[in-house]
Length: 70
Image 1 (cartoon, rainbow, N blue to C red):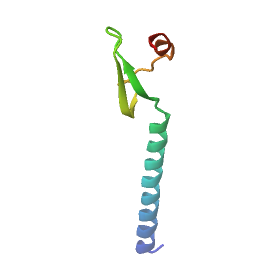
Image 2: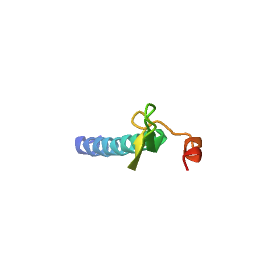
Image 3: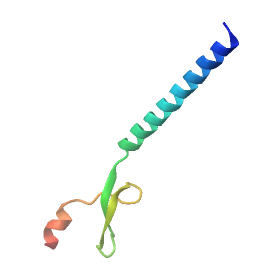
């Protein structure tokens, strides 16, 4: 094969790999649970976020806590 043809093919394959890596990264990020609220275990304060936060920042809150506070 011609060197230019191989170079073109290699560039096309590298570009396709970059796109696939990007898509796989986005899919993995979508699998991580995200939450809009966080509750302090000590004082029961509830912090509401404007954007969903990852689980290590905001642990899930059971809905039962909101029932008895109303």
